[in-house]
Each structure stands twice: as structure tokens, then as C-alpha cells.
Amino acid sequence: MDAEKITPVKINEAQAISYAGQIAREMGCKVRKSKFLGGGSFGRAVKITTDSESFVVKLLLAPGMMEKETFDLRLLAENCPVPMPKVLYKRASSPDIPADGYAMSLIPGKSALLSPFLYLSGKAGRMSFADEVTSALHAIHTCTNGKFGDTMAPDSSSWTELYKPFALDILKKTDKAVENGELSAEILRAAQAAWEKFDDIFCEEPARACLIHGDLNTANIMVQRGRVSGFIDPLNSMFADPEYDLFQFDNLTGKRFFLSDTYIKKYGASKNVRVKLAFYGLFNEIYCYFKAGTLIPFIMNPLVENMHKQLEKL
Image 1 (cartoon, rainbow, N blue to C red):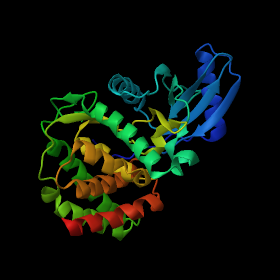
Image 2 (tube, helix red, strand yellow):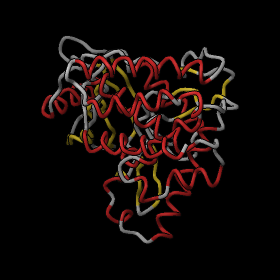
Image 3 (cartoon, rainbow, N blue to C red):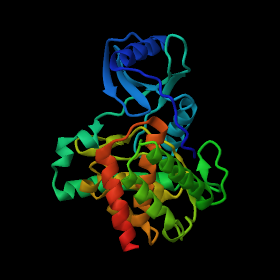
Image 4 (spheres, rainbow, N blue to C red):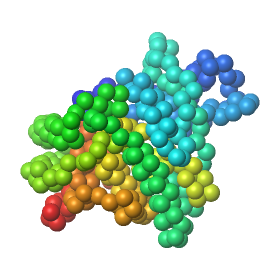
């Protein structure tokens, strides 16, 4: 785990469509239609339609991501009861396409974040959705390892050994960022207050190093006709504390679907789970800022508020 800043490749929508089409032609496909699907801090996705099929080409904005991301997709797919994208083709960056890219199978439907039907469904429908999602995630968590760490090379004997130095590094970088006027003092105060209680918050060591998706918020849960059709876009998958997967359930629209509450009720949790999730959420969002240089106030501000709120309950 490291928070060293990357220099992302700059790719706009038109370029993404052009590069994806070129990758599809390298695969021997005749492109009938291309559709830009969007992307976050680390990637751009394009839907390619041929005479016989549709698939997705993802262009990675950070060097060194492709081998891990394609490895993680395969590993997660082996342990997940709902579909995940299957890697079809991959290619390294080149002078004509400045980003690494790979093609993967298309998961049908739309993200739960953008599904009005699901969002407006009654409580019973939303709880059924939560049950499907949490059952599938727990199946992933049953894949364990003797060591904690990156899926490709786990090497830490405990979660604290792995995570505590990472959190301290984030705190130090936050302090410098505030000095430089990059981040607000409010963010630093919340991070410092949380760090001072680190040993109390993380007083229970996870019993096992569990495989995690790493970014399972409602934007990365695909649905079709109100049912889960698959998971997409893992990020920083590792063998970790399984609760490190749960803070994303409280982001975006996850709380409307009772996702973290449902997982905790079904499978149990550590005694300090809520303050742990607040810690994970805040430090992860700061990490994402350092990694990609993007600060999203409507995500960050509630995390800062929740960190203080949960510390008061500790």
C-alpha cells in the first residue's frame, strides 16, 4: 500500500473512443458502434459493438495498473457468485495509444447508482437487493490467505502491520498538503483526531486475511430488472480486513440500500466497526486525492463529519 502520486495520462472522450476502436481492430473486430461509458480518476471505458457481440475497452490512466487489475478480475471472478468482467485482450501503451488498455466482457444492465427503478423500489425490494449484494461479497471474503497484502504478493503477518504505516503516511502527507494550501485544515483535524485513537479503534486484529474487491460502491454494482447482474471495477484488491470492503457501502447511495448494516447483521463485525469504517472511508478518500489529484467535496465533507461523529461515540 502506498500513496505516491501518479501522473495520469490525459485522455478525453473523443480520444478514448478512438483508442478503444483501434484496440478492437487489433483484436480482429469490425467496429459497428462505439459508446463512451465514462470513467473515474484512473480509467476511461468505451463500449464496443460489433456484428456479433458487445464488449468494453478500458484505458488505464496510471502506468502499472493493467497487470494487477486484470489479475484481480480473474481472481475475483473465481470466487464471486455473480458475474464479473472476463478479460478478453490486453495491450501495453505505445506511441499511438499512450495508455495501457484491455478488453473485457460486458456486464448487462446499468449501475445501481443510476437505476431509478431500484432507487425508488420499496423497502422490501431494497433489502432484497442488499441481501444479494452482501451474499456475493461475503463469498469473495471466504477466499483467504495466510498473509495480508496485495493480491499478487501478500507479505504482511497482520493487518495492523500492513495498514498502520499506510495510514501514518497518509497523515503525514495530509499535514504537508495543508501547509501547501492543497487541503483544508478541517480534513487534517479529522485525520489527526482519528490517528490519535488508532490503537483503540483497531484493538481487534482480523482473524483472517480475506480477499476484498476494494471499491464496491453502488456505482460498481450492476443491476438488471432490479436484480444484481454483476460487479465491476475492482480497485486496490488485496487480502485484508474484510471490513475494509464495507466503508464503500456507505458512499454514494449505499445507505439507502442498508448495505453495510445488512452485511454486519448477517455476518458479524468487530466491536468498533462503525468508527473503523469512518477511519477507512476518510483515509481512503485522502489517499485517492494524493494518488490522482482529485478532491470531491460532496464525498469528502461527509466523511470528515462522520469521523468526528464516530470518535465521539468511541
